[in-house]
Image (tube, rainbow, N blue to C red):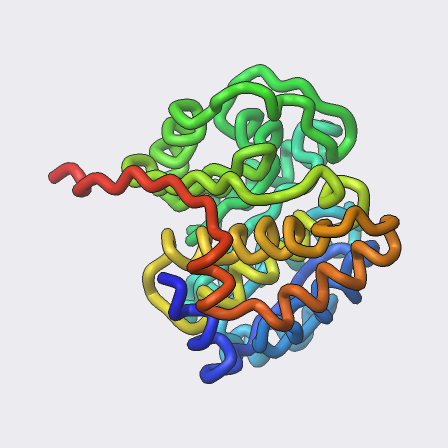
Length: 267
């Protein structure tokens, strides 16, 4: 799995983002830092052409814009049409009725390869009670592994739930990542950037579970390494970008704290 870090740099996949305008610049830069190529769009006119040439597609609802709601749906359907891996980041899905309705519509009409959110967002999508505010989760002190597996089975896709311990599962096999730092919650966009990282890996491998795991591991481990000397938050953000840029197989082998429960798929 760790060899995917090198494969991204070799393939240089084109990652198309339909994302929010708060974190769009960071998402572009983090994609470049990993070795992929970012492309952003808010255009209805170019959906067919631009999805067709992409390697993977990110759909992030973080900044709700009434004029763009249908664009997410059209882009997702185009990704399915052209067999492009597509990831959904349902930012703040529990915050408002409009976000909930949009997320449900997307999940009902688009086949997503990965659905990524914080633990509260994923639990909410699965119909479970959550503790959260806006786009923030307060559910991180519990072991939600079995709940996240149920959500993955319900959605029939790979689900990523980020938190104190990150959980990635296809409903049966599970990866749990114990790397990270609380500072990742102190800068805007680390979740959005994680979706960009996952999509970068999806653009160069067909192993969806491993790609999702590597995307989250890249963020969590790089954050941990960036916080090594307890820098102030501005320096931490710069360090985070540098650590992702310099991440390699040797660092992954040395510092990764990964639990895996790999089961055979039921027949």
